[in-house]
Figure (cartoon, rainbow over the protein chains, first blue to last red):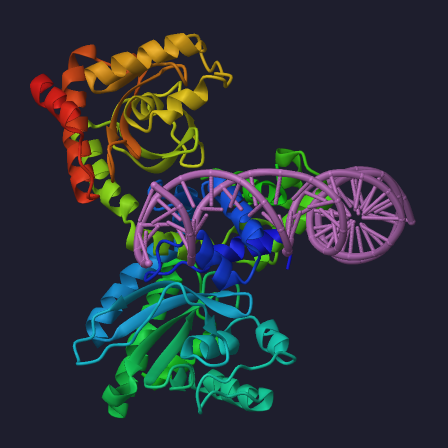
Length: 261
Length: 261
DNA sequence: ATAACAGGTTCATTATTTGAACCTTAAGTT
DNA sequence: AACTTAAGGTTCAAATAATGAACCTGTTAT
């Protein structure tokens, strides 16, 4: 891991629950030497990627990130477009809905909205990258994203998150094949115990998905008779999002959705 | 400049007009060796800060930036809060309004909205950092932000952007004193020829401003009798934004505003 | 066919990053 | 008031990672 990666990786320790971190937090979380971490933090701060609280000396994500994000969103307004439809979908299904983008061999959360009403709710963090092989999002990405994704997983270790996580590549391949066949993915507590989810891909340009939309539901609340309702709503949302992003649902997939609905 | 700074600096070449850049663009813009730039780009991409268009091989800002920005905004929703009031202010004054945050010795654009109707409009880029000594934003930051800002400028070269840019530190100090006295800043084409602007500080925590709000107007359209109207509207917006951010307008400043209005 | 150019790669050289140890400040304890 | 602890921050020789000239590859234009 090069210096740049080490420095950027420090930013990944922030989350909604940990919006401010001190030098020692970074040291412990990253396992790097204090001096190294300190220099990286200072350099990130000098470039506006971090800001330091003068009093507590803790660091928080900086203005440069908001500025760059804003530039990206003005040219590729993925998040704005996605968020509108996710909000609507969350309202309709009354459950947590999230959208994520394919980033290397993980899914990077882009937006989420939780309108669930039951006694329990799914814990979702925008800071946490999602694995491809263990989540409905990831499976939809593997089935409809660039084929190279699945290939690249073939020689990777598939981490076991729960009893139902597919850890064998051939099993995964079979599952992905089924997802491709059905036109949506389903995860039964394969990432987090007690959470089930449905996922569909969305498209920005070219024949392969750039991201996914998923509904996550506490397993105890899942009513399997509602599955067709969830998938139908996901398809509608994906079509809307893809259209607005200037993307096309591949013809074969769109036919599948039309027939099933 | 360390490796990290060199890599992060590459991200600053993006703008609304240049949302995608190729290897050679970065090489020319940064003046660095092609191999160096390439490795930096790859490392940024591996960490999600860039994405590469498979066909054109050009790079654009990546999903990680949007994700991190979203984490920051969920904990410190500066941009969301500011944007609401900027939109409203822009509607009221029918001119370009922007908010920027103090970042080191520059102002980092946070949000802007242009509702101007005249024949000309101010060209504003979210990608471009604003100098402290030559813009209304910067002067408001110098007058009401941390006093260390002005101190740090004392041994810096003050770049001359136009005939009316203050390039002498003592002149600048006098101007900043006047801004402090009046409770708002005014720039008469001191950054861009043909653009005048009014600026006020806003507050998040502590006694010093964290950012500024400014109205930018083509010089030819400026009606000086409207100055009291602009400053009054700016004060209202700053009070609203600061309140929502959990900040306080320092008592002396608030009194000044109350008397002038 | 060939030239021009952008993207991408290599490897010996060079310069930067690294980390153990040290310093400083603030808060809590005796 | 002296002591302890822990966090932030700094130093400098040693070690490692970054660098850039030259080279390769693929695409486009003539």
